[in-house]
Image (cartoon, rainbow, N blue to C red; front, side, top):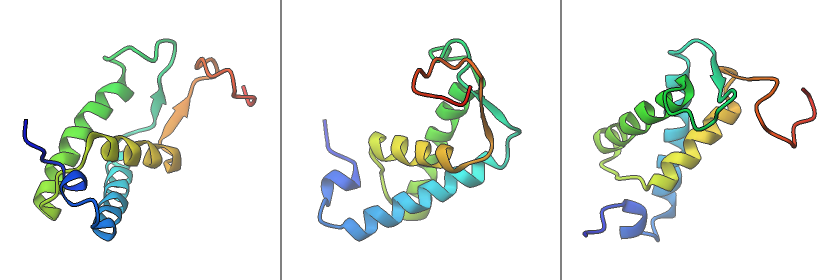
Length: 108
């Protein structure tokens, strides 16, 4: 299997990796604006047909194409996942259910 991720091929190019990650986070934030409010998880966080999980899959695929088209860059799955969830954390588009299974949450 050939290595194809830019981060692995050129780990010393930190400025470029950071620039792509910052752009990816902006990209995800902009995509979230296209959707109505989305409930995070709900009763079953492993329900792969839940709107949040479907959105994740779609945006991951689109982000890979976006990076290739705009940066000629192949992000690692970890870079995609990290920037996606940073954007989720900053976005006001996501709603958490009162009983979302998070035992550390004290505002419910």
